[in-house]
Length: 209
View 1 (cartoon, one colour):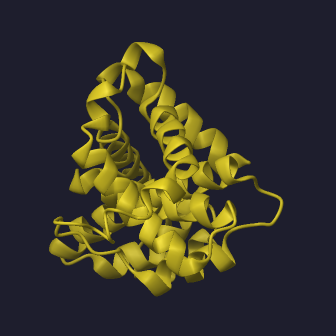
View 2: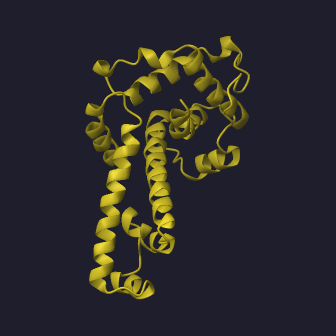
View 3: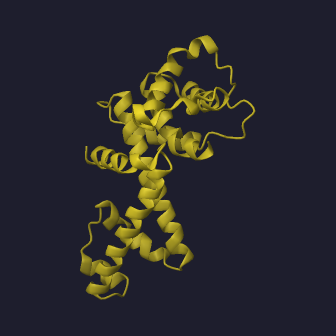
């Protein structure tokens, strides 16, 4: 459940904010929603034969919000659970900076889901390289993983004191490891292994949009 919370906390928060709730209310409802999932054993009703888990979770969230007023936030911001909202300021800042007005709540949920998966994967890759004493390599090359690097291959190779061939080999290996770690992250979010490839296709489509 903690893994589910880590991955979906921000997407759920962004969805609730886009539905018109104020910041504090959205934080409370985000916590209450995950308590609801735990206390009502809602996750046990997810049926892999009826669609993706992510779609099930979104439908459950919509139902939860429709009945939120009646419950009057009975979970009281986390109830007996030990979770805390991951980062109140970070979540709100992210919402303000990365939530285009044209996106519906559903599309925003998907966008934050995709971004959170990529961020989690990058963190794992960074940690791996830092443990090998190669944290500086990650910092220099992560732009090539994300397609945001503006410097040329030669400029980066010179900065790392590598030959051009060695740099390209390193980037190739990092991309391969990134893909493997991303697959692992996605596998944690689905009900069955057979869903992984479909979720990866959805992830790529969301990132391209």
